[in-house]
Image (cartoon, rainbow, N blue to C red):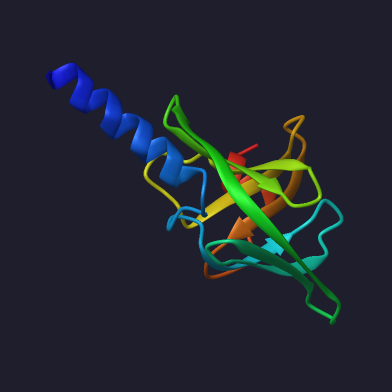
Length: 126
């Protein structure tokens, strides 16, 4: 009976995870792309907005479709309404202040920070 209850709990947790974004990455982030151009990225429970610091912005609906922790790296998978998949990655153990957004191939699109702009070196140490 305990196994059934545990299985139901895990299934229920996975269903909730697929609905809206995690509290870990919700909010507004300062972001740099590969060309060091500044953006603000805002995650609400079901929408994300990417705004160039100098003006233009785009908004998409999204759902979170995965969560993983591997070698202390937290990764949240999201699927945007346009069909693309991305990941919000926090590679520093115990630190969700800075991270990255990657495409489905693992290519880094943005380095993100809650309170300031971070460089690739700040996040990955290379």
